[in-house]
Length: 235
Image (tube, rainbow, N blue to C red; front, side):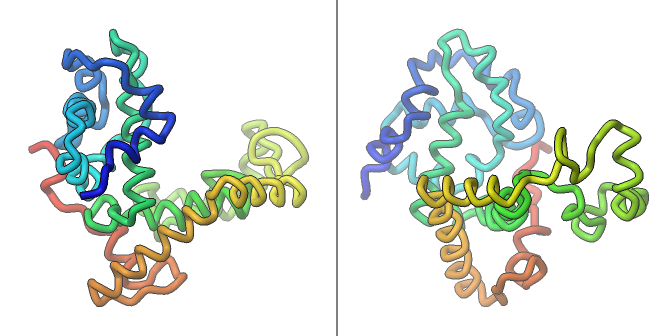
């Protein structure tokens, strides 16, 4: 078995996020995700501390590491200065690098995040872009959402937003800035990281015998976007 703990310790977030967990459970008590999912950040930290590669493999291939919302509430309350959220980030990063993320239902949903938030960052310079959040993809927004999207240029100035203007929130990001952003992603390996998500997702789609292409509504995307089994949640 590969030395996953050694790989993890190459990530600065492990060094910053794990000092000496005393299993007090404060992180779990404050964690919003632990109130919703079958999830316990204290157990994640304790598992990494064991340095047991088989247990860490289970984390890398399972659903648990994908429950965290990365709100970092855990960091604010830990009496030892630990940050389970940073440990989760390191585990997620390694899971994607190794292609293990496609082994779990929640892990496979990383393709949806890459094709939405990841794509928007490179295309618009924003991780959340209102016009791309359609009612078809997000019916939970309600019937007013479509009307708002059609009238953004008139609606947003009422809130002091210079929509696609020269300054402020939701301003138009210049082409030069977008080119610089692309260069940062290329130099830091971000584009390779994105490509790996696509590559491993394609392999999983072939294994599941589901159609896979660049469309947001191909069979594989539809499967991972909509499926959410009951076992993830507290009863």
